[in-house]
Image 1 (cartoon, rainbow, N blue to C red):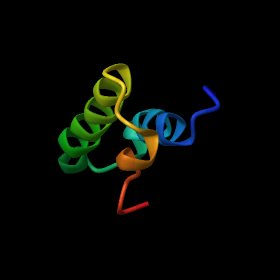
Image 2: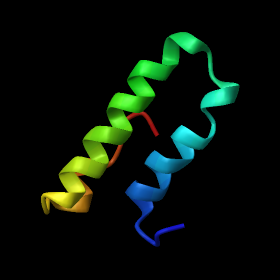
Image 3: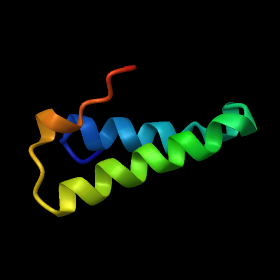
Length: 53
């Protein structure tokens, strides 16, 4: 765990890929990439919270 809730949530979604339907993989990968990239570029964490979570 990183201690950053939104990052941990994104990583947990990736860790559970093997349990998800293959059709869900692209969306999960894209969302994790979006969150991690935005975080690296300094976007506020609160702006990255997943609306579906």
